[in-house]
Image 1 (cartoon, rainbow, N blue to C red):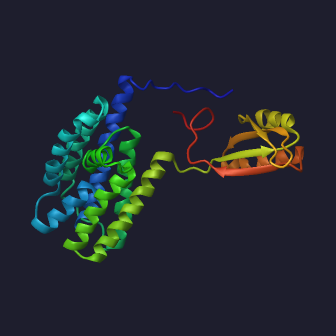
Image 2 (spheres, helix red, strand yellow):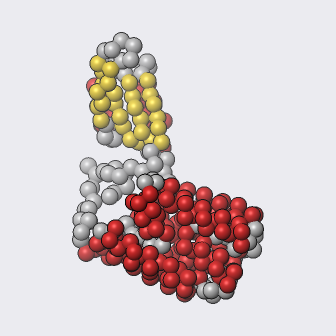
Image 3 (cartoon, rainbow, N blue to C red):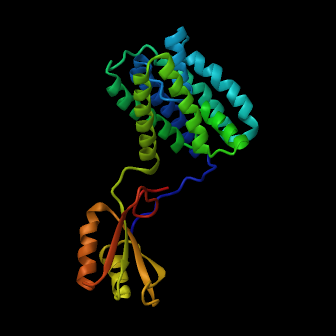
Length: 288
């Protein structure tokens, strides 16, 4: 019998402390990547940080000051649109991120190769934002502006975010050159993929759908021999119209071969569909 882990209540002080801790750590990771890779290589990959890179290289304005100057007014404008908890976290993020940028501003760049800077800067920024999001936090900035545009323009939230990122990258292409704008697009793409990995996990878990005439035997085999949960789904044959059950089970990559062998030994004529699962939360997998 697997030992169940205690779940921390959503409103508990411990969880709130953890969420703010993740906001701070994520902001520090983001700021470090910004100063090690993106800013010194003139890569403005969207957002307020990208705008601060442009103004720093164009006018010499410190990035942290620019970020505060943009974040705080946007936060005040967007306060009415956000719930209390989100507003507080956005306020903290709007202050903490520029502070982290200021504290890490003396770091020397690790590379002067813009392609390497785009890739590794994108990874670092995505990792930082992903950590903040895992803590249900926000770094403020154009995220708030995107919500405002989404509310009053009818554009989807994703399209609203793309508008502001696109404007920053287009401005970078004008201020620097087209090549820097292309590097910024690479960084933005890498950032988005890294956020997905941090948010959804990077595992090799599979979802198996099994169609068989030996449903009950396979159910017991998966439950007791493989020690995995199984769900019975109601279905009907597309050709015959006969009602039947489809078994659904979630297994790790290392258990896939064993599952296939078990199913084939029970019913050689069974039909197995395996699909990747980005993240599985629950007993036997990652806790909530």
